[in-house]
Image (cartoon, rainbow, N blue to C red; front, top):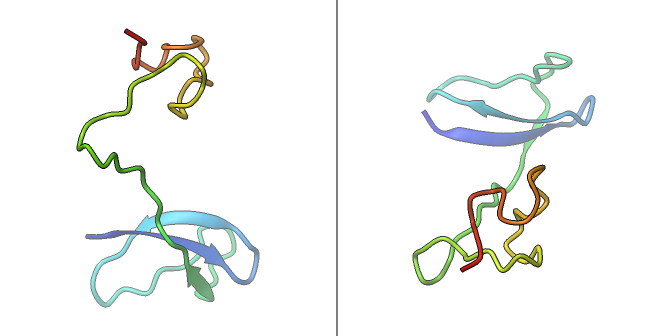
Length: 76
């Protein structure tokens, strides 16, 4: 089952849901089926590996509650 992202056109709620072939998804907030599919965005590194943490927030994960490198991407 593919995972899709939607925005409800009735109440503006944004959500993700698994959709089986032939099923019509509905908004979990208002139960409307007037949905707009959203473009799913995910990070891909052109080198095929995880980005390195530089400790300056450029990895996009350094706002982790444990501070720089707390996300597991520790600077070398």
